[in-house]
Image (cartoon, rainbow, N blue to C red; front, top):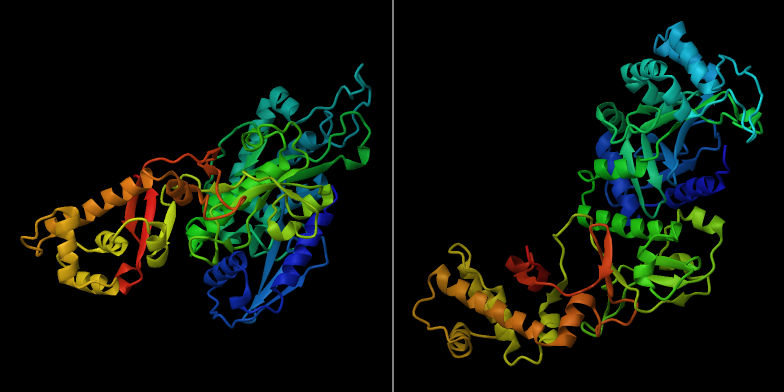
Length: 522
């Protein structure tokens, strides 16, 4: 099989990262993974719970590491990359298994031999005569089998469909040597996807493949001959059956969406790392030309995820930046990229010499999500951003006030917290908004006040180019590349052009944590 040194290094890195750490000291990805393990296995834990992890040296076993939490030990199979061969064995070993566990008939066993040896025989002894191109005439690949022997294929696919759970269990969890796998994890300790044995099996049993291109399907898995040696130069690789799980990462994304407690942050991170992987692995991707239209050769350009906080001129503090990723130019080895799964953040390149490509900052939004915020402003940052407006605190109050009958009693508290008395505030409502103060004991009055404030602030943003750019891209508040010149949304990378927006309040208003959010118009 192919060299898997980067996979081995990943297993050691994850084991070393987890071993001896308390839950509270884990990164977000590992916290979510450990929480998922504990929920699945009904294991109690606290912030002080210590995790232990050991690397499994026996490469015949499917578990790559063991994780122990509160004296409960779980086997984890770790995967990387996109090919994801999950099981491979000699055809006669496979036949012994299906005879004992699937009650396979001699007909079924011989059909598997016929498919795997791929030369018209049941034992690989077919003629080695070659055609003019050097290919052995009697040998066929999976596409050739599918075309030439539709009835044989139909019979074998029926056998697969009737034994799904048994075959999936062997391919992913048990293998030839009675492995002990409870969870499958795809990725690194910094970013990954995972799922339990039960959920994988349930999903695969009920999963209808989106394509019928593969010769044989086992849920999302495909079954093939490892190597038919069409030219006769890899004879030692013949006679082995291989199962691959190419859509593992995508399947796990689907299955995990209901599993991550901090789903917004966590799945947002997945999207950011996913774009880094896509671009760093494929230098022909047209998104490179969008980012760097004057460059022809992208071989030394890499998308780096932002992992640092940066100084904001608005808050005067180091905070999360507007861009989630940006491009650098550097030289990285193929081995290094494999070890990182082509996923790179600022920490990964700190020991390399690199050149930041200014103007390439990207804001990355979760796929198919419109529930995101362009800008969240605290009381202090709102007042600073709009300091050019006279009576800025008044306009902030007017955005924050309640109109519903059951909540209007909170308005005097908001007014007082922002330095006004109720009488002073109502005078401003009359003089600045030209709203008559007849009665304040109804929702219509306060709705009108808040609407007037929203219109005012929206006009201020649209009428001030620098402010508008700062709110939507971070320009003028963050230095390049930490403002967002581009936006990646719904799988499309485009220039971060300003569109229509709404002005709402944040969720902490009732606890006197006052924030204003600027969001896409729904």
